[in-house]
Amino acid sequence: MEQRVFGSLGAVPVLGQGTWQMEEDDQASAVRALQVGLELGMTHVDTAELYGYGEVEELVGEALAGRRDEVFLVSKVMPNNATYEGTLKACEQSLKRLRTDRLDCYLLHWPGPHPLEETVRAFERLRSDGKIRAWGVSNFDVDDLEEVLAIAGPGRLACNQVLYHLRERHIEHRVLPWCERHGVAVVGYSPYGSGDFPEPGSPDGRVLAEVARAHGATPRQVALRFLTRRHSVFAIPKASLEAHTRDNAAAERLRLTQEDLARLEEAFPPGPVRRQLPVV
Picture 1: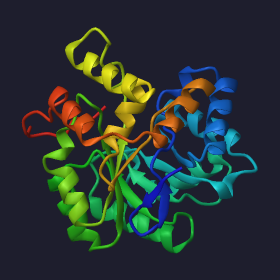
Picture 2: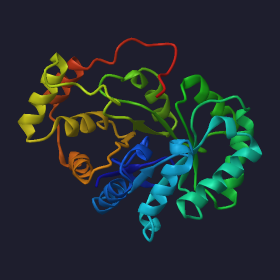
Picture 3: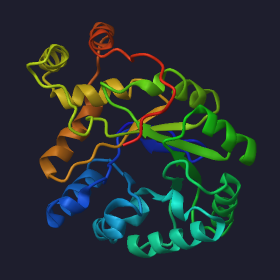
Picture 4: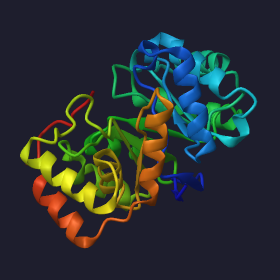
């Protein structure tokens, strides 16, 4: 699996595994899908205390049993918990559910009601205590990112995890360039659009299908490769079936041509700049 620089943490697989809404899936199948992903090199595993209110972290802990050292493990604190003491407590609870003594990266799930200074101070405490290797944010727009930078200083913010799929490319206007200027990794979640993936019969879906056929690939593989065409971007597709995991991993081998990229750019334009970053 291709790897890229992830903030100050070194090389991380460009394609990882998301777990949002995995509590709704068959547990045995989901655990197997995650384990197959590890075998295929998708060792970047993302979860959150919010997902199933801890249930998904427990499922991830089961999937990673005996394999923790292979994994780049990420979880998130809910904004309502993100006071100084609340963040420390939430992290301890996540570690317990995940059956581990540390996280590779710990994120604030989205901007919330508590002062960012408190959350950042807690993150730094967790880092100095060895509970986390680094910290980041999720669903932060440029103004929020500037605030974090002013509080923490350069080199502390590892990543910004944001919604990014073919029909939602808003981050390319301001967020992605900001992150690239500041050495912040961008992790795209819901790369298949959470129910908004182009259908073969739609005009943009036909273009996607044609590019896929030309490469002997699937439309989802083309989507993943297009979304990760910039070296600052990672993607964390969710799969609860082994077949879907294998399909995701195979996207790494796909090489899109400049003509392919131009066709996809035309079919899936970034759209206008909006005032607010979309959050799912």
